[in-house]
Amino acid sequence: MAEPLFDRIALVGIGLIGSSLARVIRREGLAKHVAISSRSETTLKRAESLALGDSFHADARDAVRDADLVIVSVPVGASGAVAAELAPALKPGAILTDVGSTKASVIAQMAPHVPAGVHFIPGHPIAGTEHSGPDAGFAELFENRWCILTPLPGSDPEAVEKLAAFWRRAGSNIDTMDPQHHDKVLAIVSHLPHIIAYNIVGTADDLEAVTKSEVIKYSASGFRDFTRLAASDPTMWRDVCLHNKDAILEMLARFSEDLAFLQRAIRWGEGDKLFEMFTRTRAVRRSIIEAGQEIDAPDFGRHVAAHPEK
Ligand code: NAP
Image (cartoon, rainbow, N blue to C red; front, side, top):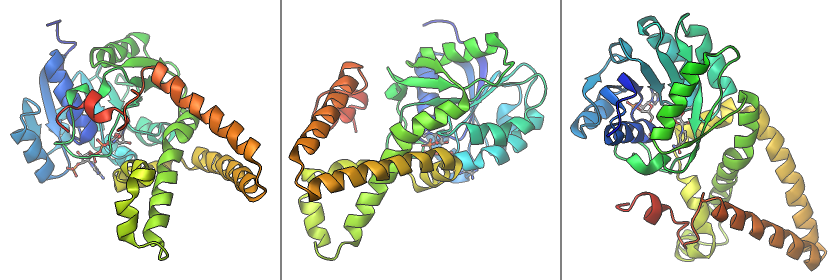
């Protein structure tokens, strides 16, 4: 096994992402010591019984004290309060990062609390599932997925490279971009699909013309694929909507315009327009498979490829 990259890593928040990090850090020997903290006693105890780290702390300050790398993995709306709590205990020279799904808002919330001499380098692994909590994580989550870093102007290049090396050892490929660009890109590739899924599943749930048992019974005809996204964590997704408001509203406006185009083509029986669009979209899926971000299997490949026991 290669040398540990850090002496002490502190994981603040030990849900799906935090616990996946804990597992890959252990598997790859990325730290000599992993200190874990979570808000609730229940989650912290569960992390301890899963042996996800070397020490467990009710107070996040005790976890981050002396840590060389601190990774905050909490809902984006909580990042400011968590940063305020941790800040006084951070060691000079430490790297502080996060995994939040929105970046401009997280930076606005966390940066003001970061003491001089601490390297704050925000990040976002483009990897996840609809499950939450410390039991949901797995070491392979980040394998062949992208991790986007959004360093602030003037960040120390050595610290950025060290964090990138950490993610590469966890299996990820690295991109860097500015936070506003990140938020726009993620609004279309992640946030909008979740909102559409929440909406369609909500609509089906409200329908009185079709009984709920029929919705469930015949779900394999398409509906089922939306329910995976719509089963995602409500706290996380409430926060994403509130904290990437502008980019999401912009993408929703474009989506509504395009939906009106489809609606019109259906109304007027314009089969050629529908066919042309459906052909174009089919090619997008082929490109995703070719880029290694999906396999061509009926359950989208996630269960077989990423997590054999799930
Ligand atoms: P999760 O499984 O629900 O775990 C959340 C963790 O944050 C738990 O340790 C929880 O502590 C803690 N927490 C919740 N509310 C808090 C608050 N108000 N103050 C302090 N701590 C709080 O969530 P996750 O899926 O790992 O998501 C964590 C972060 O990763 C989010 O920012 C999300 O945007 C980002 N992310 C998620 C995915 C995904 O697919 N899930 C993918 C990429 C990035 P207790 O359990 O002790 O309350």
